[in-house]
Image 1 (cartoon, one colour):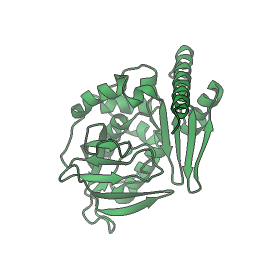
Image 2 (spheres, one colour):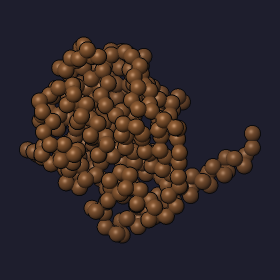
Image 3 (cartoon, rainbow, N blue to C red):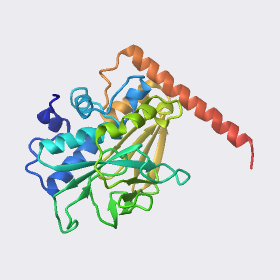
Length: 294
Protein backbone atom coordinates (compact mmCIF):
# COMPACT_ATOMS: atom_id res chain seq x y z
CA UNK A 1 0.00 0.00 0.00
CA UNK A 2 1.28 3.47 -0.89
CA UNK A 3 2.51 5.57 2.02
CA UNK A 4 2.42 9.33 2.40
CA UNK A 5 5.63 11.19 3.21
CA UNK A 6 4.05 13.45 5.82
CA UNK A 7 7.31 15.13 6.81
CA UNK A 8 8.22 15.76 3.18
CA UNK A 9 4.76 17.14 2.44
CA UNK A 10 4.93 19.55 5.39
CA UNK A 11 8.42 20.62 4.31
CA UNK A 12 7.04 21.30 0.81
CA UNK A 13 4.52 23.64 2.48
CA UNK A 14 7.23 25.40 4.46
CA UNK A 15 5.90 23.99 7.73
CA UNK A 16 7.28 21.78 10.48
CA UNK A 17 4.80 20.63 13.12
CA UNK A 18 1.35 22.22 12.63
CA UNK A 19 0.12 20.78 15.94
CA UNK A 20 -3.10 18.86 16.60
CA UNK A 21 -6.22 19.48 14.49
CA UNK A 22 -7.66 22.94 15.09
CA UNK A 23 -9.30 25.74 13.17
CA UNK A 24 -6.10 27.77 13.35
CA UNK A 25 -3.89 24.91 12.10
CA UNK A 26 -6.29 24.13 9.26
CA UNK A 27 -6.07 27.75 8.12
CA UNK A 28 -2.26 27.61 8.26
CA UNK A 29 -2.14 24.36 6.27
CA UNK A 30 -4.61 25.60 3.64
CA UNK A 31 -2.86 28.95 3.13
CA UNK A 32 0.55 27.27 2.91
CA UNK A 33 -0.74 24.81 0.32
CA UNK A 34 -2.11 27.44 -2.07
CA UNK A 35 1.00 29.58 -1.61
CA UNK A 36 3.53 26.81 -2.23
CA UNK A 37 1.79 24.26 -4.49
CA UNK A 38 0.53 25.87 -7.71
CA UNK A 39 -2.57 24.94 -9.62
CA UNK A 40 -1.13 23.87 -12.98
CA UNK A 41 -1.85 21.66 -15.97
CA UNK A 42 1.68 21.38 -17.38
CA UNK A 43 1.70 17.56 -17.33
CA UNK A 44 -1.23 17.70 -19.76
CA UNK A 45 0.59 20.22 -21.93
CA UNK A 46 3.65 17.94 -21.91
CA UNK A 47 1.54 15.01 -23.07
CA UNK A 48 2.19 13.05 -19.87
CA UNK A 49 -0.51 10.85 -18.42
CA UNK A 50 -1.58 11.21 -14.80
CA UNK A 51 -4.18 9.45 -12.67
CA UNK A 52 -6.49 10.47 -9.84
CA UNK A 53 -4.45 8.42 -7.34
CA UNK A 54 -3.84 10.74 -4.34
CA UNK A 55 -0.48 9.16 -3.57
CA UNK A 56 0.75 9.67 -7.13
CA UNK A 57 -0.26 13.32 -6.86
CA UNK A 58 1.39 13.66 -3.43
CA UNK A 59 4.62 12.16 -4.78
CA UNK A 60 4.61 14.68 -7.63
CA UNK A 61 3.99 17.52 -5.18
CA UNK A 62 6.64 16.42 -2.68
CA UNK A 63 9.38 14.72 -4.66
CA UNK A 64 9.15 16.59 -7.96
CA UNK A 65 7.99 19.90 -6.43
CA UNK A 66 5.17 20.26 -8.90
CA UNK A 67 1.44 20.99 -8.57
CA UNK A 68 -1.63 19.82 -10.42
CA UNK A 69 -5.27 20.63 -10.92
CA UNK A 70 -8.24 19.92 -8.65
CA UNK A 71 -8.19 16.11 -8.76
CA UNK A 72 -4.51 16.17 -7.81
CA UNK A 73 -4.48 19.00 -5.27
CA UNK A 74 -7.75 18.06 -3.60
CA UNK A 75 -6.74 14.43 -3.91
CA UNK A 76 -3.42 14.78 -2.09
CA UNK A 77 -4.35 17.42 0.50
CA UNK A 78 -6.94 15.21 2.27
CA UNK A 79 -4.35 12.45 2.56
CA UNK A 80 -2.14 14.88 4.46
CA UNK A 81 -5.01 16.19 6.58
CA UNK A 82 -6.16 12.68 7.51
CA UNK A 83 -2.61 11.72 8.48
CA UNK A 84 -2.66 14.74 10.81
CA UNK A 85 -5.98 13.71 12.35
CA UNK A 86 -8.55 15.79 10.44
CA UNK A 87 -11.97 14.55 9.30
CA UNK A 88 -12.10 15.26 5.56
CA UNK A 89 -14.77 14.49 2.97
CA UNK A 90 -14.45 14.65 -0.81
CA UNK A 91 -17.47 15.72 -2.87
CA UNK A 92 -18.43 15.71 -6.55
CA UNK A 93 -18.39 19.33 -7.63
CA UNK A 94 -18.68 21.39 -10.74
CA UNK A 95 -17.00 24.67 -11.68
CA UNK A 96 -19.22 27.01 -13.70
CA UNK A 97 -16.72 28.86 -15.87
CA UNK A 98 -19.09 31.49 -17.30
CA UNK A 99 -22.76 32.34 -16.87
CA UNK A 100 -23.35 30.64 -20.24
CA UNK A 101 -22.24 27.31 -18.77
CA UNK A 102 -24.60 25.07 -16.81
CA UNK A 103 -24.39 25.27 -13.02
CA UNK A 104 -24.29 22.12 -10.92
CA UNK A 105 -21.99 19.31 -9.85
CA UNK A 106 -20.91 18.25 -13.34
CA UNK A 107 -17.93 16.32 -11.99
CA UNK A 108 -15.30 18.66 -13.40
CA UNK A 109 -14.26 19.54 -9.85
CA UNK A 110 -13.42 17.69 -6.66
CA UNK A 111 -14.52 19.71 -3.62
CA UNK A 112 -13.43 19.25 0.01
CA UNK A 113 -15.00 19.81 3.41
CA UNK A 114 -13.43 19.37 6.84
CA UNK A 115 -15.66 18.63 9.84
CA UNK A 116 -15.32 18.56 13.61
CA UNK A 117 -13.84 22.03 14.09
CA UNK A 118 -16.46 24.32 15.69
CA UNK A 119 -15.64 28.02 15.96
CA UNK A 120 -17.60 31.17 16.71
CA UNK A 121 -17.61 31.89 12.97
CA UNK A 122 -18.58 28.30 12.19
CA UNK A 123 -20.71 26.79 14.98
CA UNK A 124 -21.37 23.55 13.06
CA UNK A 125 -17.64 23.01 12.66
CA UNK A 126 -17.77 22.21 8.92
CA UNK A 127 -15.43 24.10 6.59
CA UNK A 128 -15.03 24.42 2.83
CA UNK A 129 -11.30 23.69 2.52
CA UNK A 130 -10.59 23.64 -1.20
CA UNK A 131 -6.99 24.04 -2.42
CA UNK A 132 -7.97 23.12 -5.99
CA UNK A 133 -9.81 26.28 -7.07
CA UNK A 134 -6.78 28.09 -8.46
CA UNK A 135 -6.92 31.77 -7.58
CA UNK A 136 -10.14 31.55 -5.56
CA UNK A 137 -9.64 30.44 -1.93
CA UNK A 138 -6.74 31.42 0.31
CA UNK A 139 -8.09 30.04 3.57
CA UNK A 140 -11.01 27.74 4.46
CA UNK A 141 -14.52 29.19 4.64
CA UNK A 142 -17.29 28.26 7.08
CA UNK A 143 -19.79 26.01 5.33
CA UNK A 144 -22.66 28.31 6.19
CA UNK A 145 -24.49 30.89 4.13
CA UNK A 146 -22.71 34.22 4.09
CA UNK A 147 -20.47 36.63 2.26
CA UNK A 148 -16.74 36.60 2.90
CA UNK A 149 -13.63 38.49 1.91
CA UNK A 150 -10.09 37.20 1.49
CA UNK A 151 -7.61 39.86 0.43
CA UNK A 152 -8.73 41.45 -2.85
CA UNK A 153 -11.51 38.91 -3.42
CA UNK A 154 -15.06 38.73 -2.13
CA UNK A 155 -17.16 35.56 -2.35
CA UNK A 156 -20.39 33.98 -1.18
CA UNK A 157 -21.31 30.57 0.23
CA UNK A 158 -24.95 29.51 0.02
CA UNK A 159 -27.14 26.45 -0.48
CA UNK A 160 -26.99 25.29 -4.09
CA UNK A 161 -29.95 25.88 -6.36
CA UNK A 162 -28.69 23.19 -8.75
CA UNK A 163 -27.84 20.48 -6.19
CA UNK A 164 -30.54 19.89 -3.53
CA UNK A 165 -28.82 19.53 -0.19
CA UNK A 166 -25.54 20.72 -1.67
CA UNK A 167 -23.69 24.00 -1.57
CA UNK A 168 -22.65 26.80 -3.90
CA UNK A 169 -19.49 28.95 -3.86
CA UNK A 170 -19.97 32.21 -5.80
CA UNK A 171 -16.61 33.59 -6.91
CA UNK A 172 -15.47 37.20 -7.07
CA UNK A 173 -16.17 38.79 -10.48
CA UNK A 174 -12.40 39.34 -10.83
CA UNK A 175 -11.84 35.58 -10.54
CA UNK A 176 -11.43 33.09 -13.33
CA UNK A 177 -14.84 31.43 -13.01
CA UNK A 178 -18.39 32.26 -11.91
CA UNK A 179 -18.91 29.69 -9.18
CA UNK A 180 -18.78 26.10 -8.00
CA UNK A 181 -21.54 23.74 -6.82
CA UNK A 182 -20.97 20.50 -4.94
CA UNK A 183 -23.09 17.65 -3.68
CA UNK A 184 -23.51 16.80 -0.01
CA UNK A 185 -22.71 13.11 -0.48
CA UNK A 186 -19.25 11.66 0.07
CA UNK A 187 -17.29 10.90 -3.10
CA UNK A 188 -14.32 8.62 -3.72
CA UNK A 189 -11.47 9.15 -6.16
CA UNK A 190 -12.72 6.62 -8.78
CA UNK A 191 -15.81 8.84 -9.16
CA UNK A 192 -13.58 11.37 -10.97
CA UNK A 193 -11.61 9.00 -13.23
CA UNK A 194 -13.71 9.34 -16.39
CA UNK A 195 -13.90 13.13 -16.23
CA UNK A 196 -10.17 13.29 -15.55
CA UNK A 197 -9.59 11.24 -18.70
CA UNK A 198 -11.70 13.69 -20.71
CA UNK A 199 -10.17 16.85 -19.21
CA UNK A 200 -6.61 15.61 -19.67
CA UNK A 201 -6.88 14.11 -23.18
CA UNK A 202 -9.83 15.52 -25.17
CA UNK A 203 -8.99 18.19 -27.77
CA UNK A 204 -12.18 19.93 -26.60
CA UNK A 205 -10.83 20.32 -23.07
CA UNK A 206 -9.60 23.74 -22.01
CA UNK A 207 -6.77 22.03 -20.12
CA UNK A 208 -5.57 20.49 -23.39
CA UNK A 209 -5.90 23.72 -25.36
CA UNK A 210 -4.30 26.20 -22.93
CA UNK A 211 -1.49 26.05 -20.39
CA UNK A 212 -2.70 27.40 -17.03
CA UNK A 213 -0.75 28.08 -13.83
CA UNK A 214 -2.19 29.86 -10.79
CA UNK A 215 -1.26 30.64 -7.19
CA UNK A 216 -2.71 32.67 -4.32
CA UNK A 217 -1.30 34.49 -1.37
CA UNK A 218 -2.99 36.75 1.14
CA UNK A 219 -2.89 39.89 -0.99
CA UNK A 220 -3.01 38.74 -4.61
CA UNK A 221 -3.51 36.06 -7.20
CA UNK A 222 -1.15 35.45 -10.12
CA UNK A 223 -2.62 33.68 -13.13
CA UNK A 224 -0.69 32.52 -16.21
CA UNK A 225 -2.85 31.58 -19.19
CA UNK A 226 -0.79 30.75 -22.23
CA UNK A 227 1.71 33.59 -22.55
CA UNK A 228 -0.26 36.16 -20.52
CA UNK A 229 0.62 36.64 -16.86
CA UNK A 230 -2.03 38.46 -14.82
CA UNK A 231 -1.69 39.85 -11.33
CA UNK A 232 -4.94 40.50 -9.47
CA UNK A 233 -4.82 42.59 -6.30
CA UNK A 234 -6.56 45.51 -4.58
CA UNK A 235 -5.50 47.83 -7.41
CA UNK A 236 -7.18 45.68 -10.07
CA UNK A 237 -5.71 43.50 -12.79
CA UNK A 238 -2.35 44.06 -14.48
CA UNK A 239 -1.10 41.87 -17.31
CA UNK A 240 2.15 41.22 -19.15
CA UNK A 241 2.99 39.17 -22.23
CA UNK A 242 5.79 36.65 -21.80
CA UNK A 243 7.03 36.65 -25.36
CA UNK A 244 10.14 34.49 -25.09
CA UNK A 245 10.99 31.14 -23.54
CA UNK A 246 13.40 32.89 -21.15
CA UNK A 247 10.58 35.12 -19.86
CA UNK A 248 8.05 32.29 -19.73
CA UNK A 249 10.22 29.75 -17.95
CA UNK A 250 11.57 32.53 -15.75
CA UNK A 251 8.03 33.36 -14.58
CA UNK A 252 7.32 29.69 -13.88
CA UNK A 253 10.37 29.57 -11.62
CA UNK A 254 10.14 33.00 -9.97
CA UNK A 255 6.37 33.38 -9.55
CA UNK A 256 5.29 29.77 -9.10
CA UNK A 257 8.41 27.98 -7.88
CA UNK A 258 8.29 25.62 -10.88
CA UNK A 259 11.85 25.01 -12.01
CA UNK A 260 10.69 21.99 -14.07
CA UNK A 261 13.88 20.12 -13.25
CA UNK A 262 12.01 16.93 -14.15
CA UNK A 263 11.50 18.10 -17.75
CA UNK A 264 14.36 17.35 -20.20
CA UNK A 265 15.42 20.17 -22.57
CA UNK A 266 13.77 18.56 -25.61
CA UNK A 267 10.44 18.45 -23.76
CA UNK A 268 10.89 22.03 -22.56
CA UNK A 269 11.37 23.12 -26.18
CA UNK A 270 8.26 21.23 -27.23
CA UNK A 271 6.22 22.74 -24.40
CA UNK A 272 7.26 26.26 -25.38
CA UNK A 273 6.37 25.64 -29.03
CA UNK A 274 2.97 24.30 -28.01
CA UNK A 275 2.17 27.27 -25.76
CA UNK A 276 3.39 29.73 -28.41
CA UNK A 277 1.31 28.06 -31.14
CA UNK A 278 -1.81 28.19 -28.97
CA UNK A 279 -1.24 31.91 -28.34
CA UNK A 280 -0.74 32.63 -32.03
CA UNK A 281 -3.91 30.70 -32.87
CA UNK A 282 -5.82 32.69 -30.24
CA UNK A 283 -4.55 35.96 -31.74
CA UNK A 284 -5.57 34.89 -35.25
CA UNK A 285 -9.05 33.97 -34.06
CA UNK A 286 -9.36 37.30 -32.23
CA UNK A 287 -8.38 39.23 -35.35
CA UNK A 288 -10.97 37.33 -37.40
CA UNK A 289 -13.66 38.05 -34.81
CA UNK A 290 -12.83 41.75 -34.73
CA UNK A 291 -12.79 41.98 -38.55
CA UNK A 292 -16.41 40.79 -38.71
CA UNK A 293 -17.53 44.13 -37.34
CA UNK A 294 -20.62 44.84 -35.21
